[in-house]
Length: 237
Ligand code: SF4
Ligand code: SF4
Image 1 (cartoon, rainbow, N blue to C red):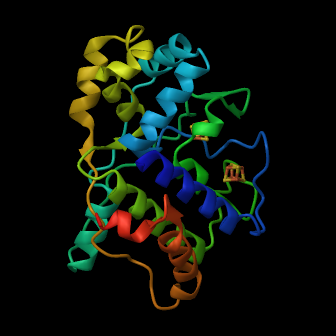
Image 2 (cartoon, protein in one colour; image 1 turned 45 degrees about the horizontal axis):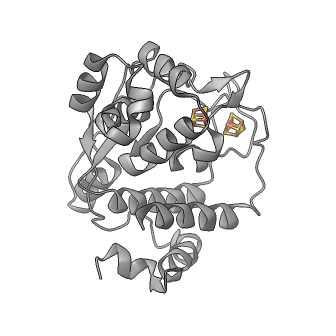
Image 3 (cartoon, rainbow, N blue to C red; image 1 turned 90 degrees about the horizontal axis):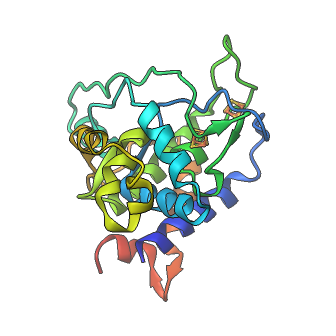
């Protein structure tokens, strides 16, 4: 059910996003760094994709050779909760610009299974060394709200840097295909580096951003999985 819910959210977000005027195109990959964060739920989808594609050995080597240098100190929902409580907070160091290890010749090798952080990345101008991604504020507010919903869906499970979440999940027997090529110390260290996904404390978008964000959230909350509204499923009904 959770997988189905997540892929439905991916589809609804992609449909909402498809009319945007953006510079992103196939083979453009300057945004593919080692700063990607995600939930365990998204990691499970990647590991299943890898095993099905018979890429376990290649994938384990990539995880082994690329350990994260920087990690967020809090999850998006932790950050949102602190902001809503009026606290001064820092989200942590996220400045590692090293290329994502799953990128080969500028193409993502796990593209169909990539997590939401990758799906939400856009720019109105082509990125380069001197030109960081130009992301419209309303778009950022909407995509952050969706990433909060995804964290809520994955609550109580791992949340963190993609390069920690993936090895951390390899002690699950379903992922033994990748685990058999992976050093167990890395799996153990990765588990210790993960945070825990938290429930949604509320959203951070402003009244001005509401016009952009609310229609997307309403579409997501009112979509149905097996006859049940997504909002009701997220609320445990
Ligand atoms: S965000 Fe920037 S680097 Fe990434 S695909 Fe779009 S234009 Fe290219
Ligand atoms: S997983 Fe794919 S889309 Fe995401 S950063 Fe890595 S190469 Fe880019």
